[in-house]
Length: 336
Image 1 (cartoon, one colour):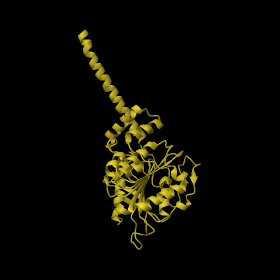
Image 2 (cartoon, rainbow, N blue to C red):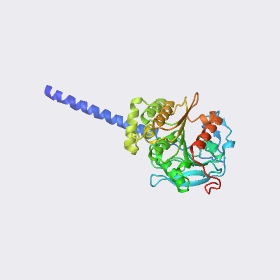
Image 3 (tube, rainbow, N blue to C red):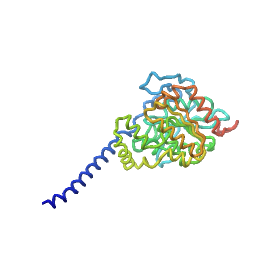
Image 4 (cartoon, rainbow, N blue to C red):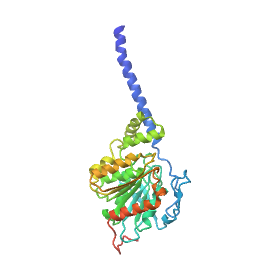
């Protein structure tokens, strides 16, 4: 009987380990399904001609006059993602002034091209003559739905590549096309740049650099135990096929940016993406040999800078792309 009892304990222990492992995997899968569901954009009722200068609908106190940044000369276009079978929607306005290029503008999580968080910067560029292409990523806005979940740019970066290629087919050379993104859009842009060496320059507002550390930070803000976060990422990767643990803007910038310029703006009170992520991405770009402009704002929340320091944001944004993009010559057929 003692021999039998001794043999039972390893079996019981193994069973407990298996049950605990299955429970951990189940919690991770449930966490990924719940936390990464792509929610409907709250700004679908506005356009570049009438958007409000409002940071978020639930913060009516932070409002600026958007009138100087609104524009009416835009068209609704369809674009093929670099992921086969996905069609994206965007607003397109060609350049209106010689000496300017084109900027692809990309929104953040649970957002869309109608969000003032991207329309404000796009309007700042448009009003001085830059062309702007404001994109709906997959699973957002009016673009095709793939799986109904966001992945921080890990799944969405081929959409940026597809939009960049769309501009190339219209005659814009790589040196005349820049990229500007906020929040999740910065991840999509960063990873697209790591895969496509022709992308010239990027202005990133509130970017993330490393998925595990950023997921742990966001989990703390949401009350998710840090022990559970690796399980969420692992199960999310297993279920979706997205390389949540494999792709890294930080590593891509360090290894593949190859001298292309980057500007980063980040609020030091960001409770969605840790400001340390912006610092890490800037350091990675510099380590990769790129000129980096880093602007950190004290007492500023996530993607709030354009509404707190509007004039300075506009000055820096316009100056960056004016200096870093090749220009269209007067009389060019690519000018409106």
